[in-house]
Length: 264
Ligand SMILES: [Mg+2]
Image 1 (cartoon, rainbow, N blue to C red):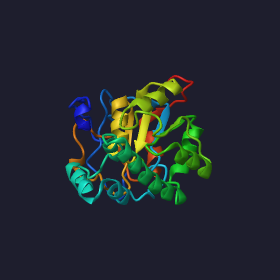
Image 2 (image 1 turned 90 degrees about the vertical axis):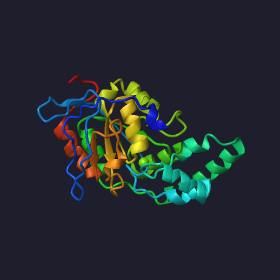
Image 3 (image 1 turned 90 degrees about the horizontal axis):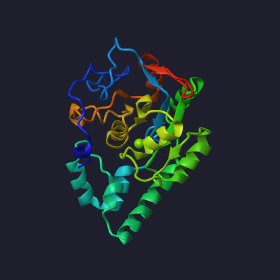
């Protein structure tokens, strides 16, 4: 199990943090290891933000349940869902255990669904404003997705937003491995503890961020991570928001936003 691979975090958790959540006020939110985000503590420095793409910078348009059923079959999909606390399935890792011919068939099906998604691609509300805010503060913007590079290229072209670096699933190992996030930090010349990972997947984005040693922010638009049962002591984002519009006030409140060329 992935979670068993996660290093144990300190059990001492300073007060829980949430951005202002209008519809839901979750009891989840915490701090990451070694971080002190209590109200009296000095603000931490933040020099870069790394985003997930599908479901975070773009509105979810891929019918993932239909895709999973097409790849896995109804029965296997039901078994894997039942075994996951959040009902989510790591299809890419599952496929990697298959024979080459089966893998090829699976990737063809996934590519078909992803192409359908590209045709309906929409920018997430608040994404443009958040990027403009980060640019105004000279804070770096990067992207990590388990989607293909062609989808990232289309996203860049369609919305006129560039993320550098932007790592797709051709970069191995992909999320939730911390390698892509550590690669971006290295490229920027900043420490992972000066970076925030933002995404809509607890299993992929938050785990990736935690394992890299970055701050983490979970985007939960639909309330699927409402239940405390979704979280364990070693798997909690620093922040949870229900909209990207909540992120920039959160950043201003809790961090010193420092361009990478400057020291805090
Ligand atoms: Mg996502």
